[in-house]
Image 1: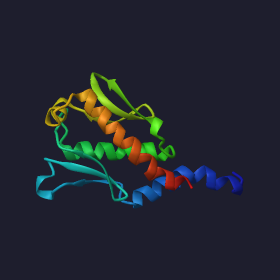
Image 2 (image 1 turned 90 degrees about the vertical axis):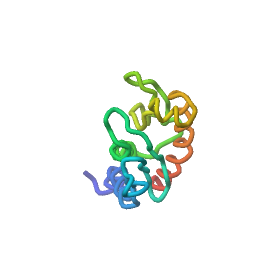
Image 3 (image 1 turned 45 degrees about the horizontal axis):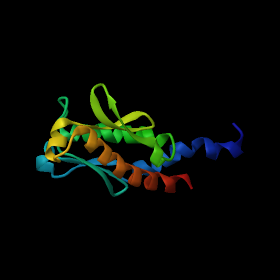
Image 4 (image 1 turned 120 degrees about the vertical axis):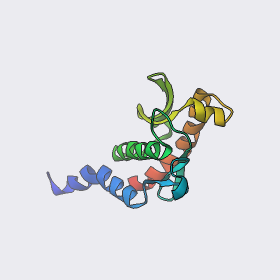
Length: 141
């Protein structure tokens, strides 16, 4: 590979490395209550708080899954608002990034928010459309 093409070829990987070093990790809201709430934080920015168990996964396990999904999304390059969509997948309302599941709006979480799973997923998508592009845009420069 010619040397002049190397930086462009490695751009997604370098962005991923920077984001990983910038604290891309789920953080338990309280270590003693890790099974009650877990936060997904990217570079010091709160992305999402998970408070419910779903499909046998604790909030912390779900936050870990979201972290892995974000790593995959960020490795593909900057996230744009239009990359974040809402759709029903396997019977569940989900927030997607480039067609891949990021978050699942479960019935219990919707009930706690006095909402429906579809409306809650859309609410989450609105926030992610605001936050994720700003976090990945600086890596594309």
